[in-house]
Length: 259
Image (cartoon, rainbow, N blue to C red; front, side, top):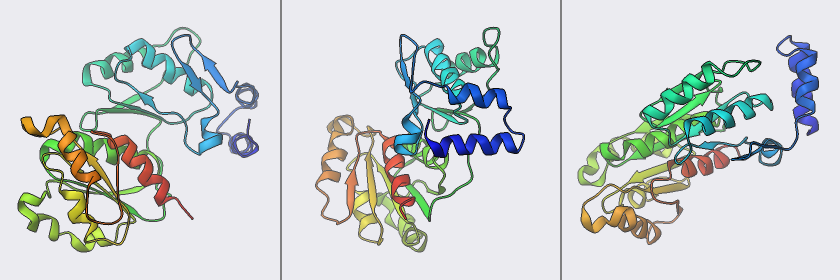
Protein backbone atom coordinates (compact mmCIF):
# COMPACT_ATOMS: atom_id res chain seq x y z
CA UNK A 1 0.00 0.00 0.00
CA UNK A 2 1.26 3.47 -0.90
CA UNK A 3 2.63 5.52 2.01
CA UNK A 4 0.23 8.42 1.39
CA UNK A 5 -2.79 6.10 1.47
CA UNK A 6 -1.52 4.42 4.63
CA UNK A 7 -0.98 7.83 6.23
CA UNK A 8 -4.55 8.85 5.39
CA UNK A 9 -5.90 5.65 6.95
CA UNK A 10 -3.78 6.24 10.07
CA UNK A 11 -5.26 9.74 10.36
CA UNK A 12 -8.74 8.21 10.16
CA UNK A 13 -7.84 5.94 13.08
CA UNK A 14 -6.55 8.95 15.04
CA UNK A 15 -9.85 10.76 14.49
CA UNK A 16 -11.94 7.74 15.43
CA UNK A 17 -13.25 7.27 11.88
CA UNK A 18 -11.61 3.87 11.51
CA UNK A 19 -10.83 1.14 14.03
CA UNK A 20 -7.29 -0.28 14.41
CA UNK A 21 -8.62 -3.65 13.29
CA UNK A 22 -10.04 -2.11 10.11
CA UNK A 23 -6.69 -0.43 9.44
CA UNK A 24 -4.88 -3.77 9.69
CA UNK A 25 -7.38 -5.34 7.28
CA UNK A 26 -7.07 -2.53 4.74
CA UNK A 27 -3.26 -2.51 4.95
CA UNK A 28 -3.32 -6.13 3.79
CA UNK A 29 -5.53 -5.48 0.76
CA UNK A 30 -4.01 -7.08 -2.39
CA UNK A 31 -3.44 -4.91 -5.50
CA UNK A 32 -6.16 -6.87 -7.33
CA UNK A 33 -9.33 -8.52 -6.03
CA UNK A 34 -10.09 -11.46 -8.32
CA UNK A 35 -13.85 -12.10 -8.34
CA UNK A 36 -13.76 -14.53 -11.24
CA UNK A 37 -15.90 -12.34 -13.49
CA UNK A 38 -13.86 -9.21 -12.69
CA UNK A 39 -10.40 -8.27 -11.45
CA UNK A 40 -10.89 -5.15 -9.31
CA UNK A 41 -7.91 -2.79 -9.49
CA UNK A 42 -7.35 -1.76 -5.86
CA UNK A 43 -4.06 -0.05 -6.70
CA UNK A 44 -5.40 2.37 -9.31
CA UNK A 45 -5.88 5.28 -6.93
CA UNK A 46 -2.20 5.13 -5.98
CA UNK A 47 -1.07 5.08 -9.62
CA UNK A 48 -3.49 7.58 -11.11
CA UNK A 49 -5.02 9.52 -8.22
CA UNK A 50 -8.52 8.27 -9.09
CA UNK A 51 -9.93 4.92 -8.05
CA UNK A 52 -11.62 2.54 -10.46
CA UNK A 53 -15.06 3.44 -11.85
CA UNK A 54 -17.64 0.75 -12.66
CA UNK A 55 -19.12 0.70 -16.17
CA UNK A 56 -22.57 -0.75 -15.58
CA UNK A 57 -23.75 -1.49 -19.10
CA UNK A 58 -23.44 -5.17 -19.97
CA UNK A 59 -22.95 -6.26 -16.37
CA UNK A 60 -25.58 -8.04 -14.27
CA UNK A 61 -26.90 -6.60 -11.02
CA UNK A 62 -25.01 -9.30 -9.10
CA UNK A 63 -21.75 -8.48 -10.88
CA UNK A 64 -22.07 -4.74 -10.22
CA UNK A 65 -22.96 -5.30 -6.57
CA UNK A 66 -20.05 -7.71 -6.17
CA UNK A 67 -17.57 -5.24 -7.66
CA UNK A 68 -18.86 -2.41 -5.45
CA UNK A 69 -18.62 -4.62 -2.37
CA UNK A 70 -15.04 -5.57 -3.29
CA UNK A 71 -14.12 -1.90 -3.69
CA UNK A 72 -15.67 -0.98 -0.37
CA UNK A 73 -13.88 -3.91 1.26
CA UNK A 74 -10.59 -2.61 -0.13
CA UNK A 75 -11.16 0.76 1.52
CA UNK A 76 -12.67 2.74 -1.33
CA UNK A 77 -15.04 5.25 0.26
CA UNK A 78 -16.77 6.44 -2.90
CA UNK A 79 -17.76 4.47 -5.98
CA UNK A 80 -19.22 5.71 -9.25
CA UNK A 81 -21.25 3.34 -11.44
CA UNK A 82 -21.94 4.69 -14.94
CA UNK A 83 -24.44 3.56 -17.58
CA UNK A 84 -26.84 2.19 -15.00
CA UNK A 85 -30.51 2.05 -15.98
CA UNK A 86 -33.24 2.47 -13.40
CA UNK A 87 -34.33 -1.18 -13.23
CA UNK A 88 -30.77 -2.43 -12.82
CA UNK A 89 -30.06 0.27 -10.23
CA UNK A 90 -32.99 -0.96 -8.13
CA UNK A 91 -31.59 -4.49 -8.20
CA UNK A 92 -28.08 -3.36 -7.30
CA UNK A 93 -29.41 -1.18 -4.48
CA UNK A 94 -31.31 -4.17 -3.03
CA UNK A 95 -28.27 -6.46 -3.16
CA UNK A 96 -26.01 -3.87 -1.54
CA UNK A 97 -28.53 -3.02 1.18
CA UNK A 98 -28.98 -6.70 2.12
CA UNK A 99 -25.59 -8.39 1.59
CA UNK A 100 -24.56 -11.87 2.59
CA UNK A 101 -23.92 -12.46 6.27
CA UNK A 102 -20.76 -10.78 7.53
CA UNK A 103 -20.73 -7.97 4.96
CA UNK A 104 -21.71 -4.40 5.74
CA UNK A 105 -24.78 -2.90 4.02
CA UNK A 106 -23.93 -0.27 1.39
CA UNK A 107 -26.22 2.54 0.24
CA UNK A 108 -26.38 3.37 -3.46
CA UNK A 109 -27.80 6.74 -4.55
CA UNK A 110 -29.23 6.65 -8.08
CA UNK A 111 -29.13 9.67 -10.42
CA UNK A 112 -31.57 8.93 -13.25
CA UNK A 113 -30.69 12.01 -15.33
CA UNK A 114 -27.07 10.85 -15.51
CA UNK A 115 -27.93 7.12 -15.58
CA UNK A 116 -25.40 6.62 -12.80
CA UNK A 117 -25.16 5.42 -9.22
CA UNK A 118 -22.97 6.79 -6.44
CA UNK A 119 -21.82 5.10 -3.23
CA UNK A 120 -20.42 7.24 -0.42
CA UNK A 121 -21.71 10.63 -1.50
CA UNK A 122 -19.97 13.43 -3.36
CA UNK A 123 -16.72 15.07 -2.25
CA UNK A 124 -16.21 18.77 -1.77
CA UNK A 125 -14.67 20.49 -4.80
CA UNK A 126 -10.88 20.78 -4.77
CA UNK A 127 -10.26 21.74 -8.41
CA UNK A 128 -8.68 25.05 -9.37
CA UNK A 129 -11.71 26.50 -11.15
CA UNK A 130 -15.09 25.74 -12.68
CA UNK A 131 -15.94 23.16 -15.31
CA UNK A 132 -18.80 24.31 -17.53
CA UNK A 133 -20.94 21.60 -19.12
CA UNK A 134 -22.72 23.08 -22.14
CA UNK A 135 -25.12 20.99 -24.18
CA UNK A 136 -26.82 21.89 -27.42
CA UNK A 137 -30.30 20.46 -26.86
CA UNK A 138 -32.53 18.79 -24.32
CA UNK A 139 -32.06 15.46 -26.12
CA UNK A 140 -28.35 15.65 -25.25
CA UNK A 141 -29.08 15.89 -21.51
CA UNK A 142 -28.32 12.25 -20.54
CA UNK A 143 -24.76 12.57 -21.89
CA UNK A 144 -24.34 16.08 -20.44
CA UNK A 145 -25.57 14.94 -17.02
CA UNK A 146 -23.22 11.96 -17.09
CA UNK A 147 -20.39 14.45 -17.66
CA UNK A 148 -21.62 16.82 -14.95
CA UNK A 149 -22.07 14.11 -12.30
CA UNK A 150 -18.70 12.56 -13.13
CA UNK A 151 -16.96 15.92 -12.82
CA UNK A 152 -18.62 16.54 -9.45
CA UNK A 153 -17.70 13.04 -8.28
CA UNK A 154 -14.08 13.81 -9.15
CA UNK A 155 -14.07 16.93 -6.99
CA UNK A 156 -14.95 19.80 -9.33
CA UNK A 157 -17.30 22.75 -9.23
CA UNK A 158 -19.65 22.33 -12.17
CA UNK A 159 -21.85 24.85 -13.95
CA UNK A 160 -24.52 23.55 -16.29
CA UNK A 161 -25.61 25.41 -19.45
CA UNK A 162 -28.30 23.35 -21.12
CA UNK A 163 -30.18 23.85 -24.41
CA UNK A 164 -27.73 26.46 -25.76
CA UNK A 165 -27.31 25.05 -29.27
CA UNK A 166 -26.38 27.07 -32.34
CA UNK A 167 -29.92 26.95 -33.78
CA UNK A 168 -30.63 29.79 -31.31
CA UNK A 169 -27.15 31.15 -30.77
CA UNK A 170 -28.40 34.05 -28.63
CA UNK A 171 -29.04 31.46 -25.89
CA UNK A 172 -25.32 30.64 -25.83
CA UNK A 173 -24.10 34.22 -26.15
CA UNK A 174 -26.18 35.21 -23.12
CA UNK A 175 -23.72 33.12 -21.06
CA UNK A 176 -20.50 34.39 -22.65
CA UNK A 177 -19.11 35.83 -19.40
CA UNK A 178 -19.77 32.56 -17.56
CA UNK A 179 -18.10 30.58 -20.33
CA UNK A 180 -15.03 32.81 -20.30
CA UNK A 181 -14.58 32.31 -16.55
CA UNK A 182 -14.43 28.50 -16.93
CA UNK A 183 -11.18 26.61 -16.59
CA UNK A 184 -12.50 23.91 -18.95
CA UNK A 185 -15.66 23.67 -21.07
CA UNK A 186 -17.26 20.36 -22.03
CA UNK A 187 -19.46 20.97 -25.09
CA UNK A 188 -22.02 18.25 -25.80
CA UNK A 189 -23.91 18.19 -29.11
CA UNK A 190 -25.54 15.92 -31.65
CA UNK A 191 -27.05 16.81 -35.02
CA UNK A 192 -24.31 18.71 -36.97
CA UNK A 193 -22.07 19.05 -33.89
CA UNK A 194 -21.32 22.76 -34.29
CA UNK A 195 -21.46 23.83 -30.63
CA UNK A 196 -17.81 23.10 -29.64
CA UNK A 197 -16.43 25.18 -32.52
CA UNK A 198 -18.56 28.17 -31.54
CA UNK A 199 -17.66 27.84 -27.85
CA UNK A 200 -13.93 27.51 -28.63
CA UNK A 201 -14.10 30.79 -30.52
CA UNK A 202 -15.35 32.55 -27.39
CA UNK A 203 -13.23 31.16 -24.53
CA UNK A 204 -9.53 31.14 -23.53
CA UNK A 205 -9.64 27.64 -22.02
CA UNK A 206 -9.59 24.07 -23.40
CA UNK A 207 -12.85 22.82 -24.92
CA UNK A 208 -13.64 19.11 -24.81
CA UNK A 209 -16.19 18.14 -27.44
CA UNK A 210 -18.64 15.27 -26.93
CA UNK A 211 -20.59 14.12 -29.99
CA UNK A 212 -23.91 12.49 -29.17
CA UNK A 213 -25.96 9.97 -31.11
CA UNK A 214 -28.85 12.47 -31.30
CA UNK A 215 -30.07 13.27 -34.81
CA UNK A 216 -31.91 12.09 -37.91
CA UNK A 217 -30.76 9.43 -40.38
CA UNK A 218 -27.76 11.23 -41.89
CA UNK A 219 -26.34 11.84 -38.42
CA UNK A 220 -25.36 8.13 -38.55
CA UNK A 221 -25.73 7.64 -34.80
CA UNK A 222 -23.38 10.51 -33.97
CA UNK A 223 -20.70 9.91 -36.61
CA UNK A 224 -21.59 13.16 -38.39
CA UNK A 225 -21.16 15.16 -35.17
CA UNK A 226 -17.94 13.29 -34.39
CA UNK A 227 -16.41 14.08 -37.79
CA UNK A 228 -17.53 17.72 -37.59
CA UNK A 229 -15.86 18.11 -34.19
CA UNK A 230 -12.67 16.41 -35.37
CA UNK A 231 -12.61 18.87 -38.28
CA UNK A 232 -13.27 21.95 -36.16
CA UNK A 233 -11.61 25.11 -37.45
CA UNK A 234 -11.46 26.50 -33.89
CA UNK A 235 -8.27 26.02 -31.91
CA UNK A 236 -8.19 24.27 -28.54
CA UNK A 237 -10.86 21.65 -29.24
CA UNK A 238 -10.27 18.01 -28.33
CA UNK A 239 -12.83 15.28 -28.99
CA UNK A 240 -13.93 12.15 -27.14
CA UNK A 241 -15.99 9.23 -28.38
CA UNK A 242 -19.71 9.37 -29.19
CA UNK A 243 -21.88 9.73 -26.05
CA UNK A 244 -18.78 9.56 -23.81
CA UNK A 245 -19.72 12.12 -21.17
CA UNK A 246 -17.67 10.22 -18.60
CA UNK A 247 -14.46 10.38 -20.63
CA UNK A 248 -14.86 14.11 -21.28
CA UNK A 249 -15.45 14.86 -17.60
CA UNK A 250 -12.46 12.77 -16.53
CA UNK A 251 -10.19 14.68 -18.90
CA UNK A 252 -11.69 18.01 -17.79
CA UNK A 253 -11.06 17.07 -14.16
CA UNK A 254 -7.40 16.28 -14.88
CA UNK A 255 -7.01 19.72 -16.46
CA UNK A 256 -8.83 21.43 -13.58
CA UNK A 257 -6.55 19.80 -11.03
CA UNK A 258 -3.27 20.70 -12.73
CA UNK A 259 -1.03 22.85 -10.54
